[in-house]
Amino acid sequence: MSQTRIKRDDQVMVISGKDKGKRGSVIRVLVSENRVVVEGVNMVTRHVKAQPGIAQTGMVQGEASISLSNVMLIDPETGNVGRSGQNILEDGTKVRVVKSSKRS
Figure 1 (cartoon, rainbow, N blue to C red):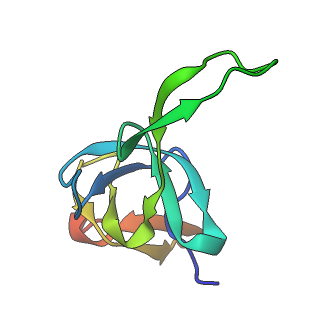
Figure 2: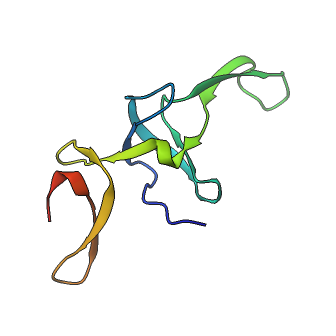
């Protein structure tokens, strides 16, 4: 199991695939499968049969997961897209940064 540098509620941009260039918020991270579910990306249609307790039936659209390697983190302060890394501050705390934004 590899370390995932993308967390829920992060803003990401899709860098490859049919939704290349789209931006969205991470809904869920599937760590064991190295996949993420991004809001509004990789929309699929499922046919849902009517059953008790299910609110919506028929053809339902929803997001499917995409590979973690196909998304890149967006820096919330600058809006730059890039790989993520960690900086250690003077007090010893670790802070996640986007490497292309050149902040310390």
